Image 1 (cartoon, one colour):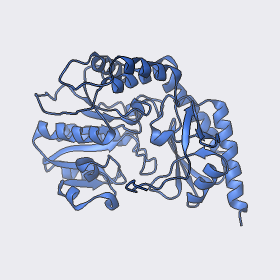
Image 2: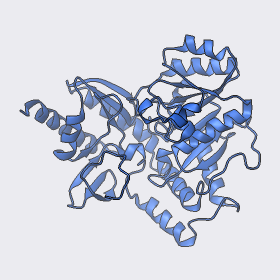
Image 3: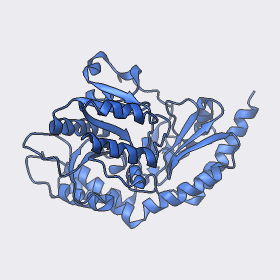
Image 4: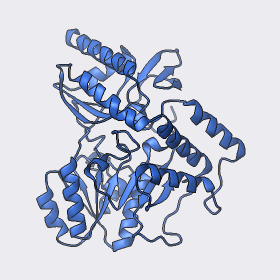
Length: 381
């Protein structure tokens, strides 16, 4: 094999996706309750999505940002209107990591400071700045350690305020709901208090909604149930339904200058076409409401399963905490029951991140198969 092996790879070759289902090269059908790390927001191969991308690629697929690309303006206007951030601006890029890199760069340009405060169990990406604010020493190289970063727990508001009082912090960054960390919701009160402290000490507040945004929690962004408006919001995963695209939503107090940011592929014709298609489908099919409704039904059904110790998260961003390590259970779900789910840094937590298009019949199927997998696990000698 010529690939540089950095992933644990399942011995499954997926060749087709339709709606909430995946199909392998043996035509085996899988129920997708993971959405490829929360990327698949509108279901696999949505016909309108496919049609719009085909139409765009027949015209033009790429040119650089040195010319006017009207699709960027269209996508930005739709995004800001649907999210409720009409007076903000948008910068398009390629990924969540790149969005976070640009966010902390914008913040540092504004106040000329460099220290970033992040939170324990956070994940913000794998590029230099993004990984420095990620709480996982195993994947951080010595090169990344040059960044000045301090980590706090979500219960550490007193110590966090003491740090902000020093007036040398550039920005505070938090996920709307932590994903890889184990579906940890900081809560309404936390975000209200954090917003107040950042305002009090003139510190820029960045919300990473890369996994928790785009309707996944039953709101456009997870932080919106707290009523706050951060200075900068980063987005990516659900934006393009699999086509690489990311973005930074920026408060008007930040003033751009020529060359401040840059990207070769960000905001290209196909990326914007995918983004426009996703937003149109989310709006026309009521998928944010569906995420909220189906999330409640899924939680209600999951509460019937005794082996689940705790259900975390909201909408269709859920974490199931079991009384045991879940590696074997995940293998049974995939191999025996043909269901994709996700893991996290917490060895007892399964992540559920299905497409926002799921229906009640899919939930019933999932619950039945989860119960069967747990029964098999219990009786497997």
